[in-house]
Length: 299
Length: 325
Image: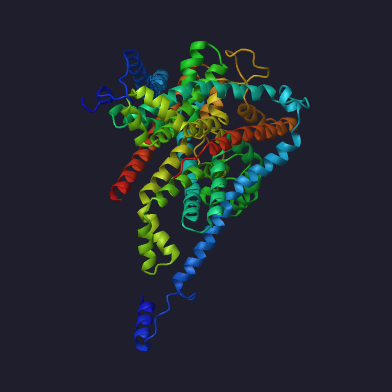
């Protein structure tokens, strides 16, 4: 403070305008520079994990990448070679089950939230709970499905795994689809209603086609999120060393394979865990990129 | 009912046409389905609480609240307690919040306050968002083979020279609290960064201009104007990040060591509720499953409270900001 008033006095005395630039010797300018350097350091440090993960995936996983990974079954203890074809199939099947359940329910709920009862008690309550569900621990989805589906069916199964994933995918689909539907201009909806459309016709012929890219973004994000999940599959789908033949039997998945193999004392299994991680990350990234390409909401 | 679409359409000219009886029925049916789908979300949350609670009931009757305050987990003697799990869950999540919160907020400031040209900022934002796309189990694998070896020398040096401080009270032999917390911090960083960015971006531009106009330096603007103005949103980012950390499972099950003890030491193996579920559930018999259901209920209660608080807070601050503007 005293420096500034000194500048002011000086400039009044000399009749010259005071310099507005911060001098380096000034304490607060120095603090400013130091903090900027600190922020750069923190930002660079924060990008190290991703770089390191991607490096390990390409080096450790990439070196093992071959065609037999996709066609062979997981090896036992001291065996060499092997692959995880059944786990890839299992992951894709369970994600497909999850999508088949959560997309219709999620989009319908989103239609209610954005078009039919945005400010109704029910609408507000279910929007709030959808947000709460986004932070729902994935392991609890597993516990819940174990109690409801696995105990009832008497066996671990791909169906149970798919349902557990659907619970985790649902809030993502609902919330992003609602945003997409809300972005359809009011005028278009009014125009449709104005020529005598029912609400249903308006939604099917005007709102949904217009909002489709945004809805697909949400669906892809949901798929990307659940395809990497493992906790909900641990005791719903369990694992299997064989190819999937029926939906009501234990099913392999990439993430559980990584979990199981990571704690094994065999070099071959560790390598396979890295290769499976690479494949899993690629699958997740494909869906992630797809969701970006399909059109991001413009903030 | 004069503004009802059907009433409007009834006064039709050549373009518009009133819906036929069939269309009217389809409309009602579709709207009923949408209503059911929206109610399904509410029913689902209710059913989850009811089902897990119901499964836990026998264990609640058997072990009462002692379950929360004891630390034996012995299936043969049917003695179960989850104090280490509760302690480890809170301890590891707080540590993760401390690290991840600091990094997340700094990254959010870095990305929103013109430190980078637009394109570079976009690229860097992508790097942070991609962190959120890496599956938990891959982070676990990475933690085992990269993080633990990387921090072991430093950890053991601290234990040797400063071992009298409780935090450094044991050596890091493999899995432990610190590697778990570090990986957890990385996993919540994108959440904290994304919500904090939204909060910082929603501060009106003229607020920032006013501060610059008074001769404040860039960091004075950030620390004395931007961050306090966005404090509500940033705080809810921290709460939601904390909530995410509490429920995170696989990376922790792989990194924390699954040891049933309450310890202050950063390098000792510990236990979290989620990891306890993940490691015991697959091989549990009926008695143990009941105890695990009780543990699941406790985890559900903790995460629900934290998440509801975080989302409520976020809605409240967003409403306040938009109300002002």
